[in-house]
Length: 408
Ligand code: PLP
Image (spheres, rainbow, N blue to C red):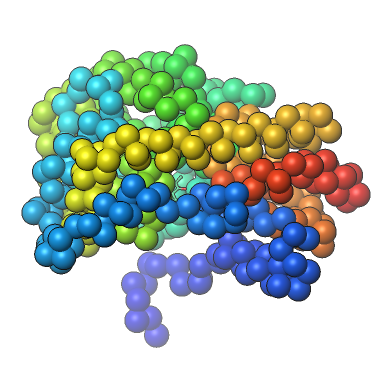
């Protein structure tokens, strides 16, 4: 007997990350933390092995009046001050398109809402072949099909595969919803160049002559790009989209403010025409009201207070970790280059991913664990979370990993 929807897949979630996190913890207890490399955790950790919680953010939160924390938000789309601040912070003056902002519970809320409300059941969402696992789960929960583009051709974005996947999907339906997780792609750390973005936009404009296009740009890790302000200039290229293209930028305070548990983010809707942007906003607002109703008022108010009153301290704190991430990334990739350990074209961000087929990956993952090196399996690779790995633990890791690879 079905107590849930007949159409829903009832297989439990196989959470590969948390299982391995638990194994790493066990190994640390058994052998001592210094004997174990735990590259599983996808949150930012400091050099002492502790979760980073930026003081500028959490001091601001704790100084808010209790009534501010207790209150409902001012509207189902989020507080106006938050929406304005999120738009200003994310786009950084680079966009001149019509826009609306809807506050969401993390980036997850923005991505899920877009996938759910822009496609009808049975239609196809376009995803990267190597990707954050939740996209596929969202597609499954909304009864959508998936089409996946291969991400790389050599060390560049695979524009040919991207185009082919879109063209194939266009034969089946009147609309495209496409996820591009950029900059700092999870889990490879790739960021598209301006030229690559240009090709994507030119192509989508072509497609939009016959199809409605929704480009979902998931920017979860943008504020940890080593290019900082420069990493936001590509938004200016969206000014060239045609009338039949809408961009939804999915923003996550989880990463930008290191406030994962406060559950706050935003869907920033961009388009040439006010009516089109408004159409999406109206439906998103109804989805919000029907699903989570309100966003955490304290999280929204903290974001505004941090940027209005503690901006310098926030920048300094964040930049310290941006630098640290770069240092860890540089060490790992340069050592990997020296020993010939193959990884996807990493530029910046929380993760580096080793490139291999899934059969090798499965054997290799086990072999790494047998040597007390804990990583996460992803499609076509092994994810190394440099975001939670100290410089000390990063040094020499690529060689150890290469030696183990050579034994399997
Ligand atoms: N997008 C990507 C690529 C992610 O890796 C994550 C979190 O891990 C998110 C979006 C959403 O995170 P949150 O819902 O906590 O903002």
